[in-house]
Structures are given as structure tokens and as C-alpha cells.
Image (cartoon, rainbow, N blue to C red; front, top):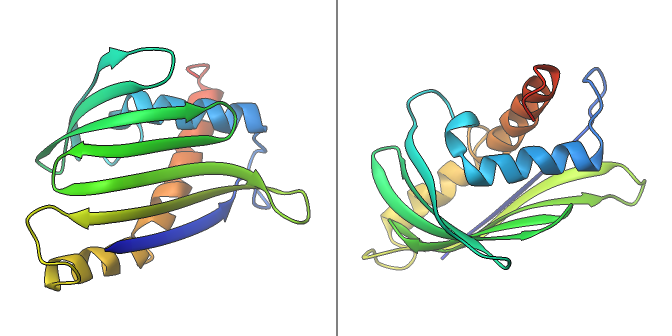
Length: 157
């Protein structure tokens, strides 16, 4: 199994501050359309195909791989992506919270397995290393906040 986590401050020194509500708008928008938040060309399709009060389902093509995710929103707090189909199974979470100093933080964590691969095999180990690297999910959190600031400044969020 793959378990990874990363946390970054929402409002590091030198950046335009985001409120919890603004950061939440960015997370919700990313859940509905990852194309706006991932590097150009990485996500070529991202469509919400079902929606109800408790969750929505999105189908996407990311890095050439088709996936289906069931996404739950805990307003102003947490987005959970349940991997229904695709190369991974399990859950990915993006969560807003205040640390012990009252500073707003954005945390990613996941608990995943790779379909059709041996547990803790070389494929899972490679995926674990990627998630934990400086170009992994920590970088994704930072780019999500950067894109949120950009969309806000353009009046598009």
C-alpha cells in the first residue's frame, strides 16, 4: 500500500493571503475540473458525469490514463477522491485546517494500492517515491494554491 502525506501553509510570507473560503473555492474547482490546475496537457478530459447532494462522480484522463472518481466535499474543510476505476484504488484527500498557531494549512494524504500490481512491489515503491518527492504532491499543493490566487485575481473563481 502507498501512504503519503504533505502539508503546506496556505499563506506563506510574500504571497497574497487567501481566506479559508477562497482556498476552499480553489479546492472545489480543482475537484470539478482538474485541467485548470494541472500542467498543460496532463489532464486532457475532466467531466462531472453524476451529481447529487452527497457526492459527485468525475471521469478524467490524466497522464493518458482514464479514471473515474467518486468525490465527496466537506465544505470549507475536505475533498476526498475515491478512486473507483483507473490504475489506483483507495482515497486521496485534500484538507484545509488550522495548525496549533492558528495558521491555515493545506494537507494532502492518500492511502492507495495499484490495481493488478503486487503489494509493495516495484511499481508501488516507485509510486510511493514519486508521491513523497519534491515534485510529488507537495508541489501539487503549492501549484493548486498558486492557481487559486491567479483565478481569484482574474475574477474567475
